[in-house]
Image (cartoon, rainbow, N blue to C red; front, side, top):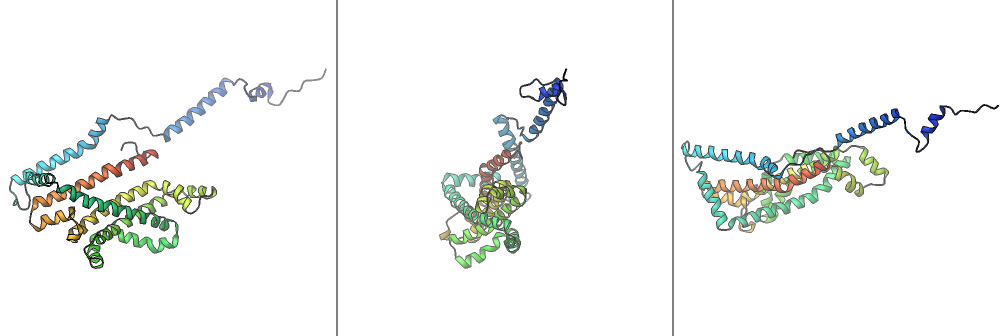
Length: 315
């Protein structure tokens, strides 16, 4: 009687290898453990942000600065009431508030704010158009980086107010002077922020893009800029801060009938007439605009970008 041949590994192993065959208890437990391990690794990469009620978010955002502002005004009132120094140097908070109210009441504040904010936005937009390709060139072309990189760092550390006298001699008391100072104040920061963001991109991403055929402008648009977005946004925030400071310096120094009347001119008017309440009111308006742009524009953009990358959950 011929002997039946049994496959190596046994019939049970052969049955388990067939599709649809029953899985043993040990194999099922091993599969469950592997699935649990993979799920645990996925959980580490998944943002675990909890949904917070809107009123708690509002309290966490607005309550601390409000308390700090109230404490500052209280200390200011105490210093003024104690008459440590003359009222010419430290006016009463009520006098400053009356000056702010007067500017809002007569409607001048809207013209003043529009003059400065429109200049700042236009100058920043032009700086963004110039600094973005400049940053890409510096980051990816070694010759350009060696030639321009130190110059950008030096311009970033140079106070923008130093450009105002030269700009006045070159362009006169015109808007060109204002925009020239704003551009030189913001372009280096935006370009350096983009360079820093590109330097932090993992090298595998550009290589994968080259394998897939992404080169030149296509690689910059679809790989470099999206991957460097957090650093680029940080550079844009710093560039906006520098452009706003440059604008105020230019409006204070280069004042004239052809330049309109912005926040810097409003501050200079208070200084020329020895009106300390007006000076502090102008400083207050400049500060409010700077904080407002940060909270209403840059903070939401930065939060959205970081959350999309799972980098920030509590902002």
